[in-house]
Length: 314
Image 1 (cartoon, rainbow, N blue to C red):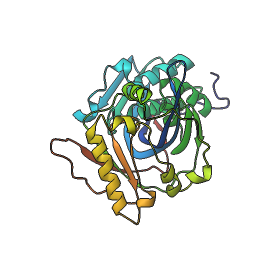
Image 2: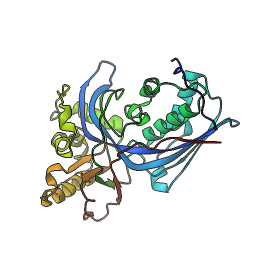
Image 3: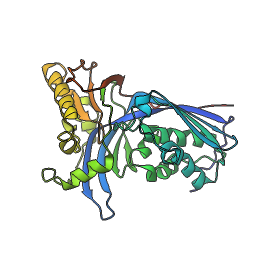
Image 4: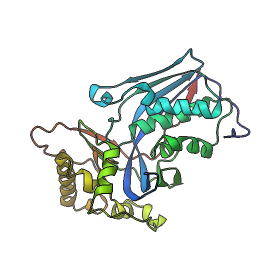
């Protein structure tokens, strides 16, 4: 990739930002391709919830340090598999810079819950490195660099709070942010492996392969319009295998239906392939009655009206 012309390296060796989580306000899985991958059609929406990411260059060696409570850090795995680490490696391989770095991540996004935490960290690392780079990439080049890292990473590398995504997440259409809404996250102490979710979908006799939709952009300018399109194809195969998820979806939807003033534009969906369940409404969803023996935690946040900028310092 060529460097973006006419840009100079900012002063400083440290960049900081917030890696904001995302939800998919609709998620349709299209037909499986010959190489085994699926095309997607989705509406990405960033949240105010995020991890704090700091990137330093000019260090001796390469390091990654993650902090957070035990539940959030469970399942992070070895550093070589961490998406933030892989993002830094890819940036260095493509651009030839930097040789060394130090990445610090303070985790707040639940790990493995379908909220794009690892992808958000990767996108934040790419944005930070690009701000510090002697020859920064253009926005389009940075998104193209992010694409092989995963379907959520290109969107979470942009500066857009809301966007339509197609293909493997690399085709994006930025949209004006919707008015900020309350979001309640029901977080389980387990995740749903994404490869398993796709395999269940491929083997399902009740979920037929989809074709791309003809979407009206006007329908995506209001919460009511988005609510009419809200759907997640993974729910049909994930909820039957995880009864806790099905109960959470039912409880939140029942609560929204009782609230006549807001039920028309309330959204309750599985986040990604799970396991987190989220509800978007004009006010935080009431705490549900959780069945005995089910360990969950509730996180309250909001949809984001902006993407937190990268700050650079010495």
